[in-house]
Amino acid sequence: MKILITTFFCCAILCLFACADKSFPTSYQTLDLKKAPQRIAFGSCASENDPQPILYQVTAHDPDVFIYLGDNIYGDTEKMEVLRRKYAKLGRKGEFQTLQQTCPILAVWDDHDYGANDAGKYYPKKEESKQIFLEFWGEPQASSRWQHEGIYHAHLLGAGDQTVQIILLDTRTFRSDLQRIEDKEQYKHDYQPHENPDSTLLGAAQWEWLEEQFRQPAQLRIIATSIQFGHEYNGYESWTNVPLEQEKMFDLIRATQANGVVFISGDVHWAELSKREPANLYPIYDATASGINKSWGSTEPNQYRVGEVVRSHNFGMIEIDWEATPVEVVFRLFDENGKERVGHGVSLEELGF
Image (cartoon, rainbow, N blue to C red; front, top):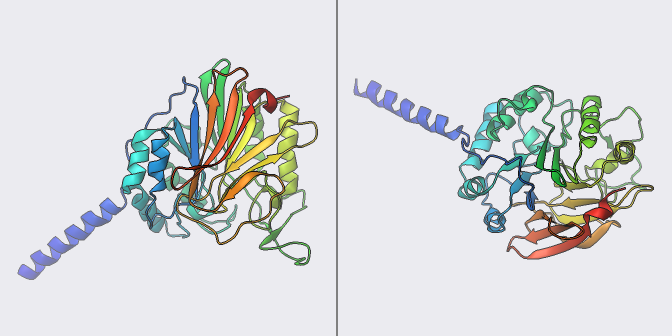
C-alpha cells in the first residue's frame, strides 16, 4: 500500500512539473495603436538555455515596442512537445519577464524556432509550430494570423502625419528550397543565388497581402524580416539567395509609391547597418541585430555597410524624432554593455519619392 501511495505521489509531482514546464506567458503589454512610437527596439538569435542579460539593457532604453526577429528559441525538432518546452523555458527567464512587463512585444520566426535549420515550405510540422508560436507570443484570438497560412501580419501605429506601419514577414512557410553551392570558385559557404523565376521567398498570397499593406497611408514602414535583406551576397541564408524576389520588393515599392520603407533583420549572429540605393528609388536601409546571446567567429564583407560591424551580443533600435523639422529617423545598434556602436540618422523626407 505504501509503495502504491509513494508511486502515485511521485507521478503526481512529475505531472505537475511537466505541466509547469509547458506553461506560457499570459500577460503581455497591449500595443497602443493610437500612439506613434518613438523608440522601436529589436533583436534575434537567443538560446533559451543560456542567460540573456542584454534584455536588461533593452529595457533600460525604454522602448515603446520590442520586435523579436526570429531564432527566438532554438527548437530544431519535429516533436512539438519539445518545441513547447523550449518556448516555456524562455518564458520563465527573469530577463524575458522584465522585458515583457516593460513594453509590448511583437515577433516573427526564423528557421530554428520554425522547427529546422534553414527550413522552408517543406518542413512537415509548420502548422503545428505556428499554433505554438501564436500561443506563446499571446496573439489575440481575433487576429488574422490565426486565419491564414503563415505568420505574416501588420500593425498601424499612430495617426495622420505620425503613422508607423510595422510589417511582420514570414520568410519560412512559403519559401522554396534554396540552391546549394555548385560553383565553388564563384560562390561560397552554403548557397548560391537562385535564378529560377518560380522560386519564391514569400509566396503568392503573402506578396499580394504586402501590396495591400504598401497602399495604406503611413510615414514610416518598418519591415521585419528574419533574414537579411540589404547586404552583399555572402553565401549564407538571405534575400540575396533569391535575387528575383529581392528585385520584386524594390519593384513593389516603386509601383505602390510606398514611402518610408526600412528593414530590420537578424539571423547572422552579428550586427550591421546596410544601405542600398536602387535605381529610381530612395535609399533602402536594413538594420541587422543578431544575436541576443549568440555570436559568430567571423563576419563577411559587405559593400553596403554603414559604420562598423558589431560582433558582440547586441540589439537594435529605430528612434523617430517627430518634433524635428523634417522628422528624423535614427538607426542605432547597441552592444551587450548598452554602448552605442552604430548610429546613423536620416530625415524622413529622404525615405520617400
